[in-house]
Image (cartoon, rainbow, N blue to C red):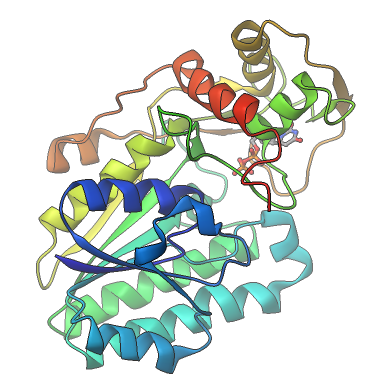
Length: 327
Ligand code: UDP
């Protein structure tokens, strides 16, 4: 297929691009490089541009005769979304709606969307199924949910099908250690734990020890980035006009912040300095996927199904790239 990947030079995007290319697809990566990294994708596939420049995107859809769009490009800092909602509604919703409409006008019938478990807010039941009510507790989740709704309405009215993949916590790096996680600023637990292990930061702050979880710290479902990437490939294979698909992507097992730190100490053989602190606003106590639906319908399964295996790949990346992509 001829595929446009927005945000394809980012963390999950670049791992997906690699699998798409291995699968023989013709891939155009569209990335502003504001958060993405030039080195994360082959130069020949990269078009540098901003989603706000919708005519540029439109031109690519036409000239490259795009058949499917995989849409990663978005802002994804929950805390920032609370203080700067305008930025999130503009980037994640307005620009996505513009992209969606250009897809409609140019006959692109397949669309895979990076959604999130943040669309569930504080779930009633954990592990979370796709039937859980979607009531986000922050603007980031609201923008992602609003776009899921737009996709469903388009699929109901036009010759168009979509799949929303609701990611749990992406983690790990390519098995060969050549691409991995590199955010500026870094706010995610696992990279920060490794930075603390390497002495790049003095300690990792644990956000809250009084949650109603077995050890008082938050529980998350960490899924390997290559397993997440494979979900996109499978979704593309399943899509047809009228498809309205939504899947949770997680391993179905939760680990607490303390468990992540202990496992990282085991993997690195180093002590991770820790400072216990207050809760971070907007963090639900536990988010764990029930991923039965994607297993059943797409034949997806996690190759990495325990945290240690995931952290080993992440450590290989962080150790060999202490400054990330070094930009
Ligand atoms: N967390 C933490 N200290 C940090 C960053 C994160 O204790 O410096 C916790 C956070 O409260 C959450 C979990 O680690 O429970 C995963 O957070 P992350 O930011 O990696 O991903 P999120 O769940 O926000 O997508």
